[in-house]
Length: 419
Image 1 (cartoon, rainbow, N blue to C red):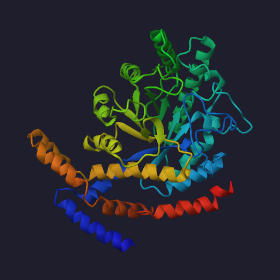
Image 2: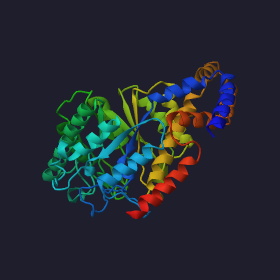
Image 3: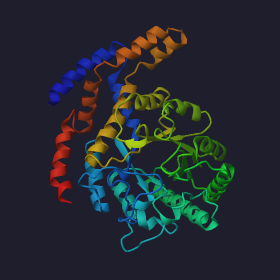
Image 4: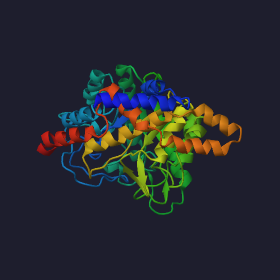
C-alpha cells in the first residue's frame, strides 16, 4: 500500500506543480499546525471533581455509547490512542474539573497546581504543550445562572478566586512545559427571559475579570483568553459575556479573544472574524466545532465553514497569532473515533489551504478577474488532495485513508467494552 501511496503522490505532485504549488513545501508547512485536544470528549464533560454530578450551565452531552473514561488513567489511555492516529503535533486542553482529586478533594476556589501535576508530567513525557480552562458550570454556586456577573457578593468572590487559581495553575503549566499555556475563561451567565439590568450584570463581570486578572504573569508562561456565546440553554434571552462585550474587553485589556464557531448566530461566519479581530488584538483563540441549528458541538467535519477558518490562517500566515483548539463532545459514537475524525478533518483543512495558489488568486482579485478567481477555486476542489494527504500521513507514521477505522474498532473491543 505504501508504494501505491508514493506513486499517487508523485502524480499529484506534478499536477499541483502545473498550477504553481509545491506539495513538499505544503507538507512542510504542516509542522506549524498545533491543535489543542479537548479532554472532555473522552468523558462527556464529566470531570473527576464529582463523578456522580450532573452537567449544568447550559451544557448537555447526549448519547450513552459504551466505553466512557471514568478515571484519569483511562482518559490518558484514550488520548494516547487518539494521538497515535492523528498526524502532526497536538496539545492537551484541560478543564479545571479534571484534576487529580483522589484523597485531596478541593472546591473550585481551592484548586492548586498539585491537583494537575499528573497532567503536566504526562504532557512533559510526550513533549506536548497544555492549555487550561476555568470551570464555571456544574457547581451549586452556579445554579443561579450567574457566576462572575453575580450580584451576590459571596458568589461573585467565590468565582473570582476560582479565576485567580486557574491563572496561577496555567502559569505554572507553561513554566514547567516551556510553552505558553492559554487560560480560557468562559462563563454560562445569562437570562432565560428578558432582563432589565443588562448593564449592571456586565459591570459586575468587568469588575470580576479585572480583579481576577489583576496579577500579571510572563507571556511565555500563560496567556488569558475570554470566550463569548450568543445564548445557551436557560440563557436564551441574553448572555452577559456577548461577543461585543468580550471583544471590547480583550482589546482594552490586551487579552486573547476566543472565537467558538458554535457560539454565534447561524448566519455569522467565524472565518470572516479572524482578520477583523487581528487588526486590534495580538492573538485569537479558536474553538472549532460543528454547530447544527444551535451550539450542539457536533464532531468537526471537513466542511466549508471549517475550511474558511483554516484558510484565513494559512493565507495570511497567522500561525503565530491564531491558536487552534477543538470543542465538541459526542456521547453517541465511539469517543476516540470522534477525536480522530474531528482532528483529522481540521488537519485536512490546513493541508488543503497550504495547497492553494494564493498569490495567483489574490492577483486575479486585485485585477478584477473574478471569473478566473471563482473558476480556480472551483477547480481546486477536485485536485488530487487525498494523494497528498495519504502521503503526509505515511510520513507521519499514522494510518492512511480509512485504516484508522479498524484500529479504533479493535481498541473498542480490547479496551472500551471491558470498562
